[in-house]
Length: 381
Ligand code: NDP
Ligand code: MG
Image (cartoon, rainbow, N blue to C red):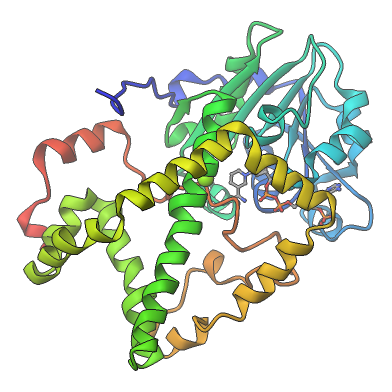
């Protein structure tokens, strides 16, 4: 049956952190992911150098953590493993200018997202291991979960195995940042890139924000108070998603009223019509063909004029945070950082990189199986 699989999941016992001892890891970039990888690896006993542009905002932050911070080219040259953690749209330029010369046979080039390799923006030379450890979580959770003794799940992939131990090295890296505590799933650069783009465009970022806005605007246009519309269409979404996260749709539906459940079954499918599904297929086709990547690369090359304009327009949209502020409980610190504002620390928002699966307490496959068998417990009501 499509959609079923029995993927092998790697845990601590499958990884040998010792593989990284005596080697040096260069973390290129010190943003959402970069700061978490650098600090977690150091605390795992790995020798870390952070590669940055002198004068950039991150330089002082990484230095303040007493990390060994060097210009990108110096860091890449000194390292055995080079992890690229700059924004994807800058990856190619950073690689060509400062990293490529250091990527010689015997070294390992790593990524946290397959975009630049899959879409051939970065073409590493032969003789080099090319692998990916992609945490399924914003960087701030990669860090805070590690500090709490846990970890976030991740994907692992090997694009090129020149050494014959690229997977073992990638798993060692995943262990160093805490991901094998939660579970690491094998994938390919292609599968990770395409499914990640699809998820963020259709469901997690594009789909959900468009749905919220359309619902909000429909209520407001019909004369309902914007504050009320905000709570209905945005605030309560978190509560519903929390229930689904905890026990799947069945548990969520168990918890809501019968009236809500009846409305769910009868109205939801009339909203996500076959036309919407056809649109989803087209979005996927544009990802698979590389059309979306070409568009985004070209946009970035021009300095992102449309991207900046849309960001401004969207920030001015009627759904503003302050509508919900009076009665909202304080947001967790990582969620409350200014959205794309001038950063005072490593980037705090959960924008394009939000890698789908939430992290906290993510159940392993065993927990998922339990849930399927047992279903939600009435006592939870
Ligand atoms: P960020 O936008 O947070 O990275 C910013 C960092 O990159 C800063 O340290 C910045 O330094 C540095 N940087 C930017 N341009 C350059 C440059 N030209 N030269 C040197 N350094 C530069 O990136 P993310 O952490 O979001 O993403 C990194 C990778 O991780 C991407 O491949 C992304 O797809 C992937 N990923 C991201 C996730 C997330 O949650 N954000 C989740 C999973 C994967 P400066 O201060 O000098 O500007
Ligand atoms: Mg994603």
